[in-house]
Length: 429
Image (cartoon, rainbow, N blue to C red; front, side, top):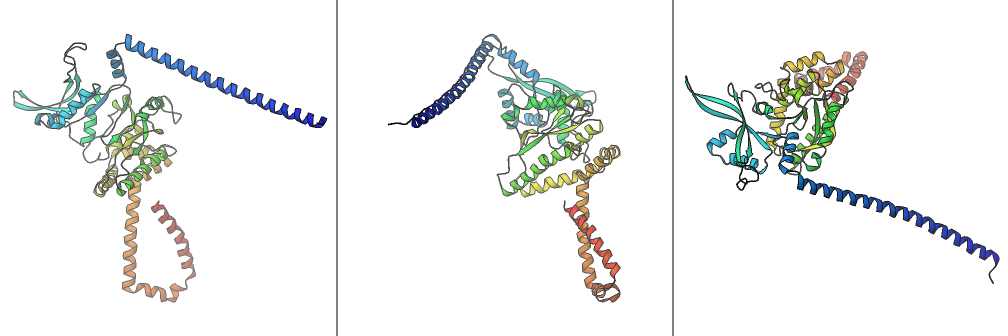
């Protein structure tokens, strides 16, 4: 026989299980409905996108779409040696033409040298030229497959364009062929990625925000990804050094020190701001050896604002041999030495506040000046010790009771050791 208590326990257990089952059923039903709604919405969106894509392909001319894209984005390659290669029949000129035919939106700017006859005889005339690949026949005709290279702009120059440093002169003569409000300069040793290109719209919106609360940015700094670190141990060392400088260091210089200028060329410029203030490069011979940082000097002196952004990066290849690494370090050191002779750093030192002035000094020429002092101090110390030992003066100092038992002198030397330790630590940093 089953007692009443056992019956009540069975009923209670059944009620608990039925309640849990109904709870799980309701949760499962809600989850299934939610997944079904998401699936249906994605299917509807996919169907709408597919219908829109078919409508675009059916009713909108592709040429008009390409024209709309070309109005928003242009890609100009400044190749100053193209004219020389073309006249000499170099295969590199044919490679450039093949690129233009493969990518119709690509533009190539170069300096063309032409011999023209005048009253004084035959003179060498220089032109800044822009060319592109074009169809010889209207699109849609039977012979419109073949593309030809056509010069679309030709500007006469007063003389040879390459008077100073080659790279900044190459940029300055081609900047007039660019369009739009923003300009990104990319070196030949740099690369980009598809997923980073999708963030460009977000980056350009940074021009609308006052990052310091006062001024809109004129240079948007980007971080760099060194992709040559796996070539060798030296390349790994160089990639780590570059990553510490172009990412960690630039981040600190931008905020809170506010002395980030411009290093390398993945940065995005306010084109209208810099086009009306001397361009994106200074090209004077020797003194503008580090031409990129002078753009930051110029932008800061003219009340611009330089920022740094971490969410987008550009790939960069660096030197992988010991000789090239030492040459790069020598170039940076020589560039800092030339900066001390420039009027830009002089004007910055007079217009910065005290803290920004010190930050600017210790992040540019001050680093190399402190290194020079530390190296000279080591030499002076070693030669001084050698003189004391060889002259016997050190033995005389250690045995002389007047100096050995001089308590005030020991206290003074102990206090000086703290200062010396702090100076050595500072120089090492």
